[in-house]
Length: 79
Image (cartoon, rainbow, N blue to C red; front, side, top):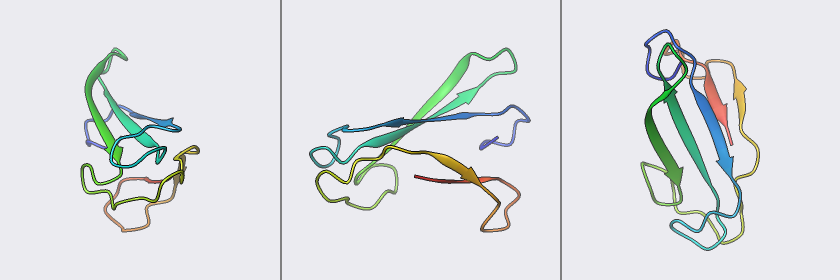
């Protein structure tokens, strides 16, 4: 639940996405409504939405939730 609305959200890896750098990959964060429909999509990619510039062919491929590393009450993601 990345936006704090009490509804779980989904992170989807996009291996090979070329945004910001050839083949660097991306992650789409899908914010859901309480009925399961998508209300907002945020794309995280090389040099987009606060992500650092990634080397060519680093390729986002695995998205895994982990504990709350920064203590803000929200489970964090590792890509």
